[in-house]
Length: 243
Ligand code: ZN
Image (cartoon, rainbow, N blue to C red; front, top):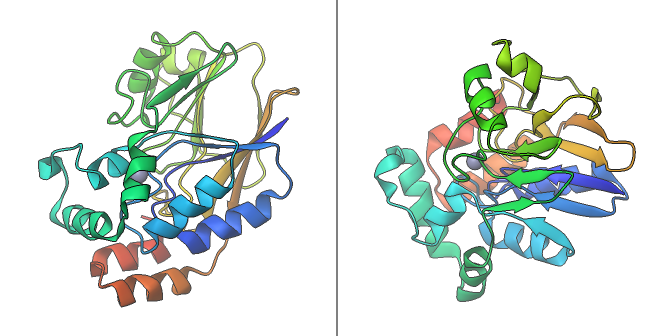
Protein backbone atom coordinates (compact mmCIF):
# COMPACT_ATOMS: atom_id res chain seq x y z
CA UNK A 1 0.00 0.00 0.00
CA UNK A 2 1.01 3.60 -0.45
CA UNK A 3 0.87 5.67 2.71
CA UNK A 4 0.83 9.45 2.84
CA UNK A 5 2.88 10.50 5.87
CA UNK A 6 2.23 13.98 7.19
CA UNK A 7 3.39 15.79 10.29
CA UNK A 8 3.14 19.22 11.86
CA UNK A 9 0.20 20.46 9.84
CA UNK A 10 -0.20 23.22 12.43
CA UNK A 11 -3.67 24.34 11.42
CA UNK A 12 -2.49 25.34 7.94
CA UNK A 13 -5.46 24.08 5.94
CA UNK A 14 -4.29 25.60 2.64
CA UNK A 15 -1.01 23.69 2.84
CA UNK A 16 -2.75 20.51 3.97
CA UNK A 17 -5.21 20.58 1.06
CA UNK A 18 -2.34 21.16 -1.38
CA UNK A 19 -0.51 18.15 0.06
CA UNK A 20 -3.59 15.93 -0.18
CA UNK A 21 -4.02 16.92 -3.80
CA UNK A 22 -0.35 16.40 -4.67
CA UNK A 23 -0.27 13.01 -2.92
CA UNK A 24 -3.07 11.74 -5.17
CA UNK A 25 -4.57 8.33 -4.61
CA UNK A 26 -3.13 6.83 -1.41
CA UNK A 27 -4.23 3.81 0.62
CA UNK A 28 -4.07 5.53 3.96
CA UNK A 29 -2.62 8.42 5.92
CA UNK A 30 -0.31 8.49 8.89
CA UNK A 31 -0.41 11.77 10.75
CA UNK A 32 2.53 12.18 13.12
CA UNK A 33 0.98 14.93 15.22
CA UNK A 34 0.67 18.66 15.77
CA UNK A 35 -2.43 19.12 13.67
CA UNK A 36 -3.06 22.37 15.54
CA UNK A 37 -1.03 25.23 16.99
CA UNK A 38 0.43 28.32 15.22
CA UNK A 39 -1.95 28.28 12.24
CA UNK A 40 -5.35 29.81 11.50
CA UNK A 41 -7.62 26.79 10.89
CA UNK A 42 -7.40 24.32 13.80
CA UNK A 43 -11.03 23.17 13.70
CA UNK A 44 -11.01 22.68 9.94
CA UNK A 45 -7.74 20.70 10.00
CA UNK A 46 -9.07 18.36 12.70
CA UNK A 47 -12.30 17.93 10.72
CA UNK A 48 -10.34 17.13 7.56
CA UNK A 49 -8.15 14.56 9.34
CA UNK A 50 -11.25 13.00 10.86
CA UNK A 51 -12.90 12.74 7.41
CA UNK A 52 -9.86 10.97 6.00
CA UNK A 53 -10.34 7.81 8.08
CA UNK A 54 -8.83 5.24 8.21
CA UNK A 55 -5.79 7.07 9.43
CA UNK A 56 -3.15 6.73 12.11
CA UNK A 57 -3.17 9.94 14.06
CA UNK A 58 -0.73 10.74 16.83
CA UNK A 59 -0.73 13.46 19.45
CA UNK A 60 1.94 16.19 19.29
CA UNK A 61 3.09 18.68 21.88
CA UNK A 62 0.97 21.50 20.40
CA UNK A 63 -2.10 19.26 20.35
CA UNK A 64 -1.46 18.47 24.00
CA UNK A 65 -0.99 22.14 24.80
CA UNK A 66 -4.25 23.03 23.06
CA UNK A 67 -6.19 20.66 25.31
CA UNK A 68 -4.46 21.87 28.47
CA UNK A 69 -2.31 18.79 29.04
CA UNK A 70 0.97 20.70 28.94
CA UNK A 71 2.49 23.46 31.04
CA UNK A 72 2.96 26.42 28.72
CA UNK A 73 6.16 27.61 30.48
CA UNK A 74 8.14 25.66 27.89
CA UNK A 75 6.64 27.72 25.05
CA UNK A 76 7.91 31.14 23.98
CA UNK A 77 5.38 34.03 24.29
CA UNK A 78 4.36 33.85 20.64
CA UNK A 79 3.68 30.10 20.78
CA UNK A 80 1.89 30.58 24.08
CA UNK A 81 -0.41 33.24 22.63
CA UNK A 82 -1.15 31.03 19.62
CA UNK A 83 -1.96 28.15 21.99
CA UNK A 84 -4.50 30.22 23.94
CA UNK A 85 -6.02 31.35 20.66
CA UNK A 86 -6.17 27.73 19.40
CA UNK A 87 -7.79 26.43 22.59
CA UNK A 88 -10.48 29.11 22.27
CA UNK A 89 -11.31 27.91 18.73
CA UNK A 90 -11.85 24.26 19.60
CA UNK A 91 -15.25 22.77 20.38
CA UNK A 92 -15.75 19.92 22.86
CA UNK A 93 -15.78 17.49 19.90
CA UNK A 94 -12.39 18.71 18.67
CA UNK A 95 -10.96 18.51 22.20
CA UNK A 96 -12.27 14.98 22.57
CA UNK A 97 -10.69 13.95 19.28
CA UNK A 98 -7.26 15.23 20.37
CA UNK A 99 -7.63 13.68 23.82
CA UNK A 100 -8.13 10.25 22.27
CA UNK A 101 -4.94 10.22 20.19
CA UNK A 102 -2.05 7.85 21.07
CA UNK A 103 1.51 9.11 21.41
CA UNK A 104 3.05 6.26 19.39
CA UNK A 105 2.21 3.30 17.21
CA UNK A 106 4.57 0.33 17.10
CA UNK A 107 4.29 -2.38 14.43
CA UNK A 108 6.78 -5.07 13.35
CA UNK A 109 7.73 -3.09 10.25
CA UNK A 110 7.63 0.49 11.50
CA UNK A 111 7.34 2.76 14.47
CA UNK A 112 5.43 6.05 14.35
CA UNK A 113 5.92 8.79 16.92
CA UNK A 114 5.63 12.58 17.00
CA UNK A 115 9.03 13.52 18.47
CA UNK A 116 11.26 10.53 19.32
CA UNK A 117 11.10 6.95 20.64
CA UNK A 118 12.71 8.20 23.88
CA UNK A 119 10.40 11.19 24.40
CA UNK A 120 7.33 10.77 22.16
CA UNK A 121 6.22 14.37 22.60
CA UNK A 122 9.34 16.42 23.22
CA UNK A 123 12.73 15.46 21.82
CA UNK A 124 14.11 16.93 18.59
CA UNK A 125 15.99 14.40 16.47
CA UNK A 126 18.25 16.22 14.06
CA UNK A 127 21.69 15.24 15.23
CA UNK A 128 23.55 11.95 14.81
CA UNK A 129 23.88 11.74 18.61
CA UNK A 130 20.14 12.00 19.27
CA UNK A 131 19.45 9.56 16.43
CA UNK A 132 22.04 7.08 17.72
CA UNK A 133 20.57 7.09 21.21
CA UNK A 134 17.07 6.62 19.83
CA UNK A 135 18.02 3.72 17.53
CA UNK A 136 18.66 1.75 20.74
CA UNK A 137 15.03 2.24 21.74
CA UNK A 138 13.10 0.66 18.87
CA UNK A 139 13.38 -2.58 16.89
CA UNK A 140 11.52 -1.82 13.65
CA UNK A 141 13.41 -1.23 10.37
CA UNK A 142 12.19 2.37 10.27
CA UNK A 143 10.92 4.98 12.68
CA UNK A 144 8.92 7.85 11.19
CA UNK A 145 8.87 10.97 13.35
CA UNK A 146 8.15 14.68 13.07
CA UNK A 147 8.41 17.57 15.55
CA UNK A 148 11.56 19.31 14.26
CA UNK A 149 9.82 20.52 11.06
CA UNK A 150 12.95 19.49 9.13
CA UNK A 151 12.62 16.84 6.43
CA UNK A 152 15.49 14.36 6.87
CA UNK A 153 16.65 10.78 7.16
CA UNK A 154 19.54 9.03 8.88
CA UNK A 155 20.64 5.38 8.96
CA UNK A 156 21.80 3.54 12.05
CA UNK A 157 25.35 3.33 10.65
CA UNK A 158 25.45 7.06 9.93
CA UNK A 159 24.19 7.82 13.43
CA UNK A 160 26.78 5.52 15.02
CA UNK A 161 29.62 7.13 13.11
CA UNK A 162 28.42 10.67 13.85
CA UNK A 163 27.39 11.53 10.28
CA UNK A 164 24.77 14.25 10.06
CA UNK A 165 21.30 13.34 8.80
CA UNK A 166 20.60 13.91 5.10
CA UNK A 167 18.08 16.54 4.01
CA UNK A 168 16.54 15.26 0.78
CA UNK A 169 15.23 17.33 -2.12
CA UNK A 170 11.85 16.95 -3.80
CA UNK A 171 11.28 13.44 -5.21
CA UNK A 172 14.36 11.89 -3.58
CA UNK A 173 13.72 8.30 -2.59
CA UNK A 174 15.03 6.07 0.17
CA UNK A 175 14.98 2.28 0.21
CA UNK A 176 14.50 0.73 3.65
CA UNK A 177 16.30 -2.60 3.25
CA UNK A 178 19.56 -3.70 4.80
CA UNK A 179 19.79 -0.69 7.11
CA UNK A 180 17.53 0.77 9.79
CA UNK A 181 16.43 4.37 9.37
CA UNK A 182 14.89 7.31 11.18
CA UNK A 183 12.83 9.38 8.74
CA UNK A 184 11.17 12.75 9.21
CA UNK A 185 8.67 13.66 6.45
CA UNK A 186 9.03 17.35 7.35
CA UNK A 187 6.25 19.78 8.21
CA UNK A 188 3.14 20.37 6.12
CA UNK A 189 2.16 23.67 7.67
CA UNK A 190 5.31 25.36 8.98
CA UNK A 191 8.56 24.08 7.41
CA UNK A 192 11.74 25.23 9.18
CA UNK A 193 14.48 24.08 6.81
CA UNK A 194 14.78 27.32 4.84
CA UNK A 195 12.35 26.00 2.27
CA UNK A 196 8.78 27.31 2.60
CA UNK A 197 7.27 24.54 0.45
CA UNK A 198 4.98 22.09 2.26
CA UNK A 199 6.75 18.84 3.08
CA UNK A 200 5.46 15.29 3.21
CA UNK A 201 6.46 11.72 2.36
CA UNK A 202 4.92 8.77 0.58
CA UNK A 203 5.77 5.26 1.72
CA UNK A 204 5.31 2.19 -0.45
CA UNK A 205 5.12 -0.52 2.22
CA UNK A 206 5.67 -3.41 -0.25
CA UNK A 207 8.68 -1.96 -2.01
CA UNK A 208 9.78 -0.27 1.22
CA UNK A 209 10.51 2.96 -0.60
CA UNK A 210 10.04 6.39 0.95
CA UNK A 211 9.56 9.27 -1.50
CA UNK A 212 10.22 12.74 -0.08
CA UNK A 213 8.12 15.57 -1.49
CA UNK A 214 8.09 19.39 -1.35
CA UNK A 215 5.31 21.37 -2.97
CA UNK A 216 4.47 25.06 -3.27
CA UNK A 217 1.12 26.20 -1.88
CA UNK A 218 -0.70 29.53 -1.54
CA UNK A 219 1.29 30.87 1.43
CA UNK A 220 -0.29 34.32 1.13
CA UNK A 221 -3.73 32.85 1.59
CA UNK A 222 -2.70 31.24 4.89
CA UNK A 223 -1.01 34.49 5.92
CA UNK A 224 -4.21 36.43 5.23
CA UNK A 225 -6.19 33.96 7.33
CA UNK A 226 -3.67 34.39 10.15
CA UNK A 227 -3.90 38.15 9.93
CA UNK A 228 -7.70 38.00 10.05
CA UNK A 229 -7.42 35.78 13.14
CA UNK A 230 -5.05 38.23 14.82
CA UNK A 231 -2.25 35.70 15.19
CA UNK A 232 1.23 37.05 16.04
CA UNK A 233 3.20 38.70 13.22
CA UNK A 234 6.37 36.53 13.59
CA UNK A 235 4.28 33.41 12.93
CA UNK A 236 2.89 35.01 9.78
CA UNK A 237 6.20 36.14 8.32
CA UNK A 238 8.11 32.93 9.02
CA UNK A 239 5.86 30.91 6.69
CA UNK A 240 7.20 32.68 3.61
CA UNK A 241 10.79 32.09 4.73
CA UNK A 242 10.50 28.47 5.80
CA UNK A 243 12.09 29.11 9.18
ZN1 ZN B 1 5.23 21.02 15.44
